Length: 410
Image (cartoon, rainbow, N blue to C red; front, side, top):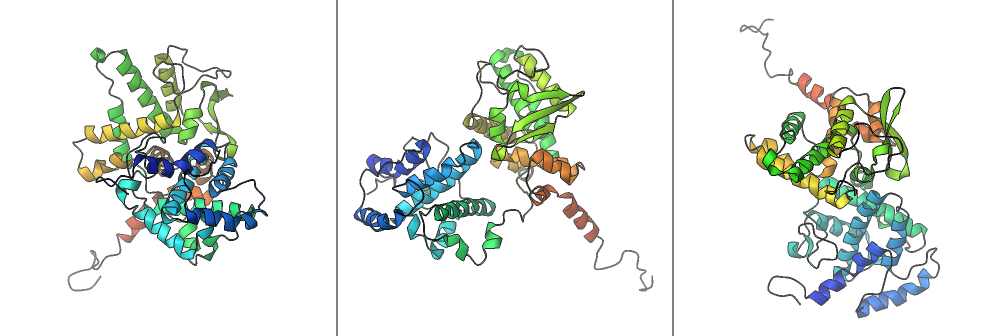
């Protein structure tokens, strides 16, 4: 039953969020009111689940255990949880569980990701996860995002089959699985072109007026440093949140940024001179010496008190708000030119950084080290220069030859 706004009553919305809260805490509990079908499915599945290799009573339990495998990579954990809970909530609306998924179910789910309906139930602005108005989608997923979702879920199902929780992986039945699941085949498109980035960066350089006060100046300096850091070193959002001052180390006169990235892998990335200039200016804003010491464990990005770190969610909001503010400020640009700023997300900064490095001539092997990709073909998606040169050369292929004389002779 719904009210006139299409919203479920509060008690039913709380039931809808049960799976989310369980995945948040890693402690699953039974739904407040199990339907007869859910009870029946549970009884039918008990015999098969006795042979499972994990201690789980429900699908939520099983997925929580799968997610536990990624606890050392918080950013990956959050991304995987998001895709798992979207699927769980969709299945819940259909009165189904993971074991009910068939080949045609995957097609239906992919269509749902492209257009979650009813939108009032599924799509909404960012809110705290415990808020009754929280929604699992900010917007319908693009083709690339849908592929990424299926990639994650395919891995989840493979793990659950190996764990004995499920009998089969429906993704293995997809005839066009390679096209759907291979997210490495397309070039990166979610980035700011160089001309737009330069205008946006120039806008970021303008400090507030002295009358605005110290708080406004601090926010401006932090925002400027954040975007410069993201552009010059191409970190992931979680890596920015976890960065410490002492992660910048000097060896034989050269500076390096030490980072523990995806897969809990330690890497060192060369720090260009512009980055050290930005870091010195940011540290002086904080009232400390221009260069960090190796044993400095204080956060790189700071809250407004200048001491505490800044979490992923706050950084995400800060970056999105800045992009949108830039879109409004650069109103002298044509709408299609500045439009990417309105939809850009923090990961666009990483894509922008790597794409511009590739365009500047950084070799693929070094670009892969900066990106910290395990595969070169993943990094190769940032190489737009080859396509541009192809386009330039093909422009000489014309219907008429400009060098041909009027009489048809050469």
